[in-house]
Image (tube, rainbow, N blue to C red):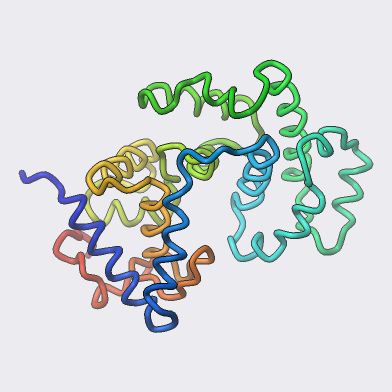
Amino acid sequence: MNPFPYKEVFQAIEQRLIEVGEKHMSSEVIRDELNKYKEYEGRDLTDDQYFSILVFVAFYSGFRAATVTAKKEIIQKHFPSWEVVSLYTDEDIKRILADPEMIAHAGKIRGCVLNAKKFGDIISKYGSIKKFIASFSPNDSFENLLLLKESLEASFSYLGGITVYHFMTDIGLSVLKPDRVICRIFERLGLLENQNQLLKTVLQGRKFSEATMLPIRYIDIVLVAYGQVKSEEIGISEGICLNVPRCSECNIRQYCIYT
């Protein structure tokens, strides 16, 4: 059996995504928006930036992306920093829930408060969240990366299953988030036996990154945009590999086993 042509398949997806997007904007604008995701790895994030990412991962979990994105400013207002939020009491939680503009999900709000308190514990011990993450040497081996994943799951509310990978992806680690869109694409390409294989999805994403020599966050955003009706991040509103796929417009059909 010939090895899977990761580089060729990704380049075909990327090219087709840009061609579809050109119906509404120039290819230069699309590439500019996509290229932002090549800069995720190696960013020097502050503790508050880590906390903000964690807050939004919690809120995006189980909700439509557009719903959370529309409430981004109000969420940021209620969760401005880990230090402020770590001092919240039950009265503060009630205040946030009473805000008619806020997403009134008690579990997520309470979880973010607990996460802020955990930030305080970790920062007291390690000096910063960055140093805590670095203590696992996650870029040295995939085993180390998985050990960090387990620690994050054990430490924080709303980090488990897919969401822990979402957080790791957004802070610039070498994993993609194995959400339903990417799992669907990989299954159709014969890279998964079924869409519940989250770890195998992560490993396949790393293979795409290695073959193309592109950052995995970039791989992630291109694949997600290809499989969504609308990509909020880059503004493309015509995906291809949807639940009901537009196979006639796809240029990787020769690699696809979807019937």
